[in-house]
Length: 78
Image (cartoon, rainbow, N blue to C red; front, side, top):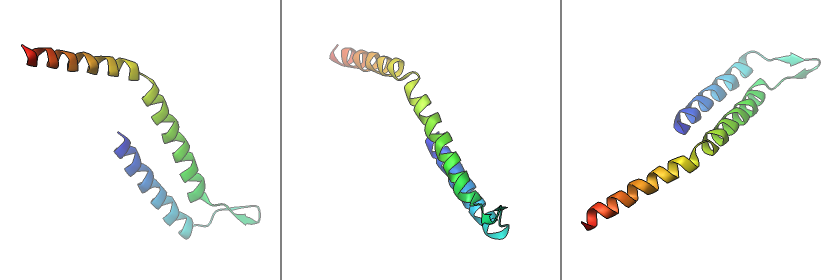
């Protein structure tokens, strides 16, 4: 999943960088760096989603893996 998020964020970042060079976005008298803003938004979104994914169910996953290892060790001794 993390690889997919990385590929998506790189693709979108490169696309926004390309579009920002072609179509300058102006806000007031200054150029608005849309590619940089998009990169920050994607970084925050994917970072928060990764943290939520990592914190939700780690204990259950670790417990199940420990049981599987114990069963494999017990079965190998017999």
